[in-house]
Image (cartoon, rainbow, N blue to C red):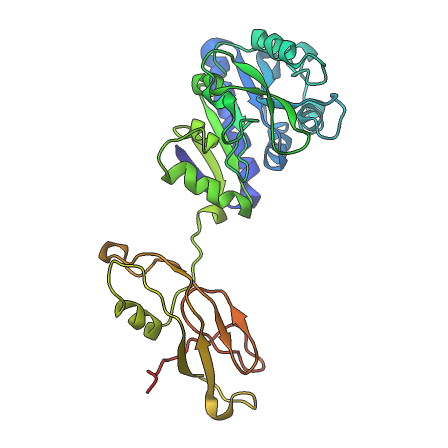
Length: 330
């Protein structure tokens, strides 16, 4: 998957520009183009920017990757969102907009009718990504993820409204370009699974677009971890290499770089509580493994789940945790 990483304020512009370029190329090469839209907050901002770009919409057919089984004017309707963000801002013939009729009682009939409208290959399919790794309305573990014949199916999702229509994997695989839009802190883990873990679309449906383009908020790829103090790292090095370790309790004395009424003599007692879980340390891993634990200062009750390492409370006028030096208990 080609990753295009940008700040959140630039994501919508970058995505809309890429979509416009691909649609213009398709019109130039084949005389027409097809675009499938996704629901969600991030795609909505992209559609608003796309509406302001110079495109010949008379040669472009618009489809949907999924739809909730609600009326077209319902607040949860993807069509209603796309209409406000895009359709009402551009000049396009109504027959160029192909809506999924999710409000029909016969959902299977509605799905089959939409199959007949879909082109053999979509030029551009815009996809969102859920916190559980779903895309379109293909949720982890769904039977639709194993579908190889039908192109649109009625599905049931874990989020309300649960009844939906969704395109199936063959449609996304056949698309000439899938553009995945991801932003928000909750998307960091599914983005990691999409790129780093072995291919398993049943567990992580967004991997259907693994070899396509992804436009991601920069913060999603930042790795945030607590760096232990040097002395804490020394204790880690002295643990048995290559095996999980466990400490029941450790008392240590931390020398703070400041003095104050609450830190007599510039020192405070700290206690490192039992480390419940720890990742294996191996030479090739270096010192960047995260270790789960909790620290707490006795005097003020300050605590921070920063992994291994002990911090002291900042003096008045300072903020954050000071890195302490450790002394072995005698």
